[in-house]
Image 1 (tube, rainbow, N blue to C red):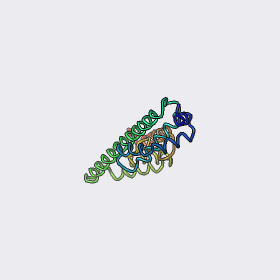
Image 2 (cartoon, rainbow, N blue to C red):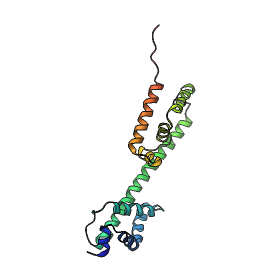
Image 3 (spheres, rainbow, N blue to C red):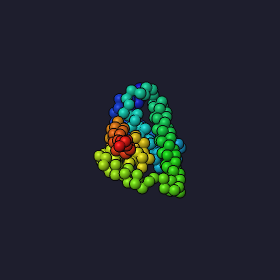
Image 4 (cartoon, one colour):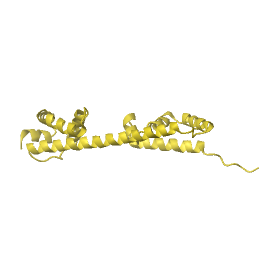
Length: 178
């Protein structure tokens, strides 16, 4: 087995460094071809780190290692491109909604809007922040978790708890007959 492949598969830093030094231009070219912008370097880094953290996936010789890593970079770039396209589509949809809402007659009753703002203000800060990022910031729960540096399950729990509290507070109370 070639020393580079042996060092790389054994997860020795010298193997990673040599592979990057030898083939980084190729990997950057692959990522730029897919992404077409300056995020290619980040993509190469992310792909190589993902491979590096998952030992024992590669078995082969030097030429196969280069092809394997290039395929990993391409897959990472495709994932990043799809993610960007989904985010852009969400933002475009949100922009269309904002224009439609701005152009329409006021939908919300000012008194009801004040009740909602007041109920939001009474939520615990962490629940209010996650809810605002989700509904006003048009962020996915995964994006919120990444942005706040907290687990996805925590984001889901906070949003769920906030929605339950808002529902309980804003639901009209049944009228009692005299």
